Length: 390
Ligand code: PMP
Image (cartoon, rainbow, N blue to C red; front, side, top):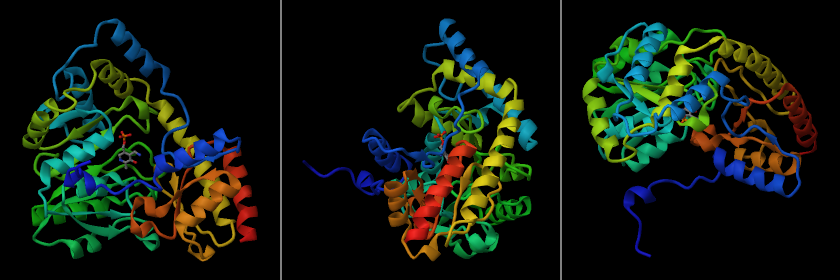
């Protein structure tokens, strides 16, 4: 076979990411082994009934054809309201693009601003799609370590250190995957000010914006109301338990949205209208379940952090958002990949090795604690027995 496109061959193989580990864990399950799942980042509850009903009704009512690329009017209006209430500014309709999931939003945002050779600054460890899109686009990486001693928050000083005259984009993700870190308002304001001074775009992935334990969410898009340099991503996947619906949105300068729309016409064309109707039900319907779910998640967080800290040679900082714990395992003397694999094979606990999120993830594991307190306790006890024997 002839060689593939260079852009495709720049994409690294996924050997230890969520779907690779899920594949291994599912195969062990098929062979009869009991598996406790901590690898995939999605809520363990169903999409709320009123959201599903809105989609079913919309299908019955005939919302099944093509619609405008940027999104249906009512959903974009709901997004305007949402941004106004949660971020404090009202974007214009031409600043909004509805996307089929956050991942697509990340790719579109990065593809809109990065040329080959441009530099992109993003945290390491971080959600793998940033690195993947940067590789695909042949952009240069300049990562900022998300340091454990700083509770994995990005430091504005570290960002400044990495800025060159080639830097085109800074990627921010707060609350963060895989560490659960929440960057402070003052730090985000400082990063936004640096970007303005140096004329750099910001991509702010706020997919966990409704999943904070103590602090209030702050968006650095407030600085320019997403009119000049900020591209904001949010979506329905996490807080509304809609990962499989593939629904999110971008808020960005209208010139960027306009170009993205031209690109989208020739790819997925539009997000299905009945899915967008479900999005309206999500944003406009009952929101109280989110706080209730966060109360449940807080108990799980406290249980897993306490449990991990009680294990030999393991320590874990308390995450402030999302549903991920990122314990330090360096004292076990094993590499993250070997340890995650042995834990899976020998205890049936499926978690991810930190390097699945970049080289600075070495020495850590990621646990998605979107599971019951009983399973968390069982996993901790199984890992205790295993860690005491190595
Ligand atoms: N951004 C971050 C930080 C994520 O963790 C995820 C999903 N794990 C996404 C984006 C992608 O979200 P979606 O499922 O909507 O594509």
